Length: 373
Image (cartoon, rainbow, N blue to C red; front, top):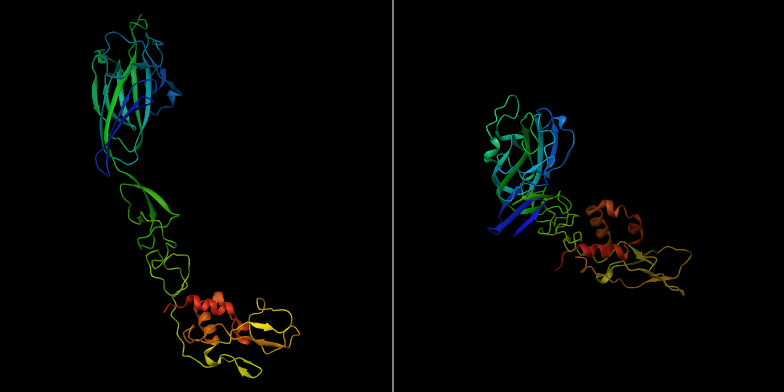
């Protein structure tokens, strides 16, 4: 696959399931920015360069060498001031894959007349007298290869300072200036992997705490993102649901069929109606109170009582739907004791239930937590 984007040639070849090999070629063209010209030497970080503009294709001397696919560029088509010394700073930014490894490359370059080449702020090569007295040794006539030391994944910056020597009485054609270069880079690329924090070290990651890594997850991260509580190692989709008020297996249900509570079977509950125990013959005294008048308050009042309620005195208790066998032998009192000990914040004192009897919903909660047969 080959593509040219803003003067960058990019080629990627599949080597293995987890590694890509790639090359990038950068050539001098109008994608390069240029500062200057100025009338003195200044370092690459100097404020003397002021502002930049896009480089232009410059007038090319017939004796200048060529580099395949690269163009001679400068700050203007003709040299602005061929009589005096002048300096220009060329700058090119390029970006390698964030997971690039084993980076290497070379910079082929020459200029009229002398240059210093920098990669990511470090000098990688120079030719001719870029500052101070000079000797015109026709440096423009030789293309040099400099190793691209200091390449890094992500953003990179190539900078070249070019000096044009003074020539009294010259013209733009007799004393031109320009730069030509070609950077060839090779690397291997690891896949970018999204990983999730595993703070409780249970092998399951927090879906709300992710980070990208190259190749594989770093320590403390995993590729899984199904943990519902990354602060507890006994809570994850692979855990067994136990009776501990937690959703251990992350299925959205807390302790469902996980609390294997047993009680010694009793034949009677401590509540009476008209002097008779409720709960004989293995039934719990938890049935809803039902009025005997024209209205049924079955869905409103859910406890048993022998007292007058809202002025009603005629009532009866239908037989409970729950048996002691269903609750593993636990009576209403025992159910309340267990639930309050199990989760006091949820069930509180439940004084009304202790006074009048367990509601249907309380017993249903209790059955929800019981382990299956």
